[in-house]
Length: 361
Image 1 (tube, one colour):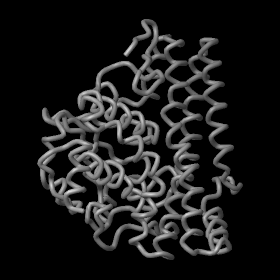
Image 2 (cartoon, rainbow, N blue to C red; image 1 turned 180 degrees about the vertical axis):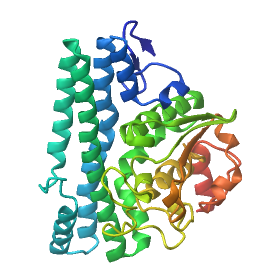
Image 3 (cartoon, helix red, strand yellow; image 1 turned 60 degrees about the vertical axis):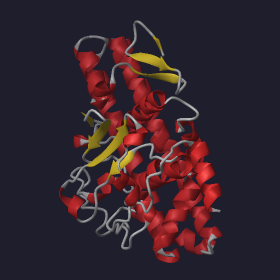
């Protein structure tokens, strides 16, 4: 990792772009808070860099939701749902997700507005106008939140529609389609390909950046809690800015939990390995089980991250979610495997998993 001496950011070789400086515990603070601190201390150059970095944090969610929405619609059609029925559902969703002023929601316009506001913020920083910079930064955050949440809600609507039309069991295969590129990326976390210490650092950095980009935590600013238990480290958040927020009432828009009217987002009614064999798991949250636990177990014998998810209806009162990374993947306890219907292997690594599969074929 090569550090830039006069910047709050540093280049990360594994990611190929600049990230925030600091250790793991430093990653729990909202980037918006760091910007505000920099402005208060007249460090306008730092504030500008950090403000622009919020776009980098948000980029993954923006791109994933864009792609997943299109792929989910196609999945429905490929499974036999008529394009006309999908279009009717799309129109129904659009009616619910109108903007506060009653105009149609336009995800691309919202993303562009967010970037434009960050550019205006950067201009205010360049001119040393702290008051204007703070106002523009908060307007940008609210614009991104509105855009992010509606894109996420749209996806949850479609997944719920898929479960209703195709059966709940099809939610797992749907996520396998949506997550296929992510599964390919997870190959790099195989201990036979890269040292686990390097993989663990990358996993922690990516999850901290993503959780901030989803605007997790109180007030939806991107604050998360770092935990170090010696043999494992993790981030805890209440709520998660994506799936977790759907379990709770939203004081900013006056909407109750999205498992209730008018949303009625689906949660598992049956037990599935792709949802930790639990009922009450938000269909969206299930992708964390598939991507972080099930598929890595299949590929190289251990989960990349271990998730302690909230469940409905208990999470209505504010239950948190925690993502863990074990410092040694061999220390992941057997019950983590058992809850998804797997058995902890004697040997880990891609070749061990391929050999075990060959032996049982």
